Image (cartoon, rainbow, N blue to C red):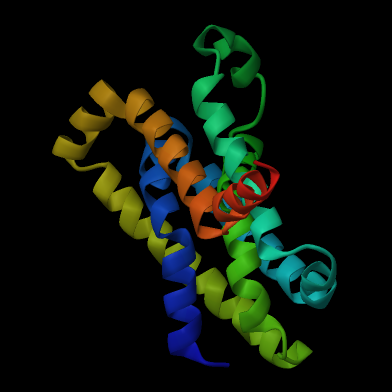
Length: 191
């Protein structure tokens, strides 16, 4: 297990989501955010480990970029008037769905090669390490989210900033995965 590679990979893959976590920590209970983010991270690690070879054999990386449309859709077509429907769902499931929709493509694409040749023992150690990093990050972000200046900014601009983050993250996934470049090549060939 390469600690520095895992740390760098975890931070790089989740860095954009840390901003979202600030908003989620202001909106939902700490325990729900922590447990959903931890569950999401560990679930994506498990999927990456178990399905790495299979996904690489059947789906090119650019195709995983389609997942970038999910956060864009959530930002553009989120109906704020349906707040009653959202309130009926658990904060855990809302945070987990948000994390999976925003980060699944990046996590799968980046963690696949990192975990590909690992044994079950090393993978178990990796899960423990990533779980520890997840808990530390949420505590740090929770401390930041409760700062008066951050609280005032999130209360005033939080919804709009969260939607902007969704759009930027979606565009990043579409570009970083190579989806837009691949689509451009197809369009050029057709024309």
